Image (tube, rainbow, N blue to C red; front, side, top):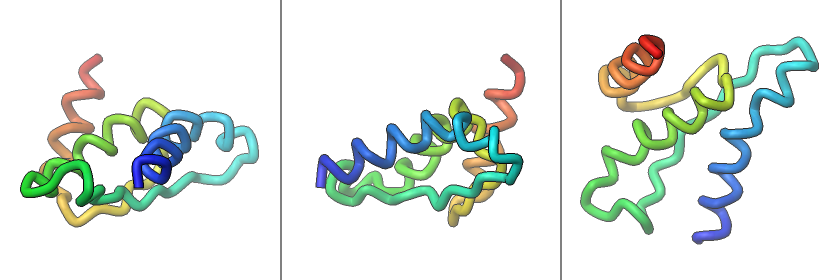
Length: 77
């Protein structure tokens, strides 16, 4: 389980490498129940930060308002 989550985090952070292919990159943001437990709704915003740092184009999420707030805040930097 930790191996899968580590792989997903590395994939999100390395998305910028795929942009050279010229296609938009979409990521489904995981829930990672095994790590977040009862705070599972915090998982998608956490993974959205990693995906945004990797320059993901499209985010598939169930937590749209939270992700939008996170991405809007990151865009201020």
